[in-house]
Length: 59
Length: 434
Image (cartoon, rainbow over all chains, first blue to last red; front, side, top):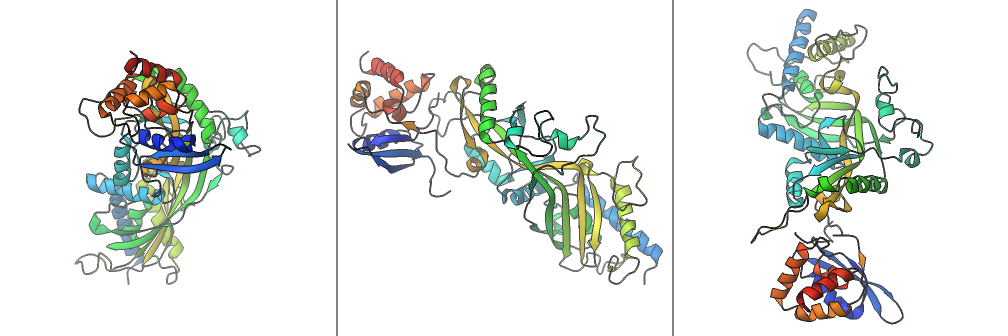
C-alpha cells in the first residue's frame, strides 16, 4: 500500500529538528519543509516541523 | 418604412431564428466543452466550484466518489473549468440546520430540512417554490463577448443569449450576465464531518473496495487515491439577466433579399413599443414552451422552457437587448465541499477543502501530531537506517515497503518519533532484533 506523506509535527526539540527534516525528506513527495519556532519550555527551544508537497508560499 | 404586418413577420422570423440558435444539437464537442468552461470560469471567480449543467438536485450531504487522482483533478478543473459529479454514493441527511440557523424563519426541527420547505412550501407540492426566507447570496456581474462566427456556442448555459443575439441581428456582441435572486445554504464542515465519519464507519466494507491499490513494481508517479467529495454548501440562482450590446454592423447588412436594419424595439422612437414587446414575448412563449401550454394573453411572461424556466424580453433598442430568464425553481450553480481520502481498510482521512485542493493551493498533508521523542526502538531503527542522514538507502526502501504492507502503516518520520510505539516496536523486531 502507498504510504501517506508525513504529518506535520509539533513540539520538536531543537536538537531533533535536523533528524525530523531528514526523515521527512525520505518521502520523495515532500518538497518543502517549514520549521517554525513554537516556544522555549525552560530547557530547550521547541519547533513545529511541517512538510509540504507543494510550494506553500504560492497559494 | 415597414408596415406593422411586415414588422410582425420580421419579429416572428427573428425569434424563430433565435430559438433555432438555442439548439445545442449542432454544436461540436469542442463548442460544448467551451460553453461549459466559460460559464464555469465566471462562477469560479466567486470562489465557488461550478456545477454544470445546472441542477436542482444537489444539496449539502450529497457524497460523490471521486476516482480521479488529485493531479488529474487539477488538470480536469483547469481544462474544463468544473469537476464532473459522476458517481453519487449516498445522500446523507445531517441534522443541525436548526442549530446552525437558530431562529431563522422556516428552519425548525419540526419542519423538513432545507431546501424542501422552500422548494415545496406545501406537502402536496401544489404551492410554487418560495425561497424568500432562504439566506441570500450575490454574485458579481460577468462580462462576455460573443461572436456568431463561433457558431452560437454561447458560453453560458442560459437560453437568453442566443435569443438576444438573434434579436439584435448582429454578428458579434458584448454582454453582461447578472445572476439575480441568488440563495445559499449549508452546514458547517464540522457537522458534516460527524455525519460522514458515522456513515463511513458503517460502510467500511463498501469503502474497502476503493482503498488505494498496491503500487505496481517499478511504477512511477503518485499512487492512485480515491476520495469522497461531500457537499457542505450550495449556491442557487432563480433569475438570470442577460444584456447584449451589438458592437458591429448587423449580420443582415448588405444581404440581398434580407430586410435591412430595423429599429424594431426602440421605445424612444416608437409608441407601439409595448405592443411589439408583447408580440416578441408571445412568440418566445409559444415557440419555447411546452406544446400544451397556453400563454396568458394578459402576461408578457413566457411559459416554461429549459429546466422549467422562461425567457422574457425586458428592454431593447436597435443596438441592445436585455432579457430575463427565470427558472421555475432555483437551480444550483455551484457548491463548496470537503474531500476525504479513502485510506487502507476503508477508513477516511481528514477533510480537505475541495476548492483549495483542485486549485492546487498548498494544504497541510495531515493533521499535526505531537513529537514524542526518539525512544529505544527509534534509536535502534535509526542506527539500522544509517544514522544521521539515513544513508542506508536499501534499508530505507525495505522499511518503506514493510510499512506499506501494515494496516496501520504511516510515513517513516511519523513512525519513528510520533505516537506509534507499537508500530515502532514491530519494526524494530522485524529488522533490528529478529
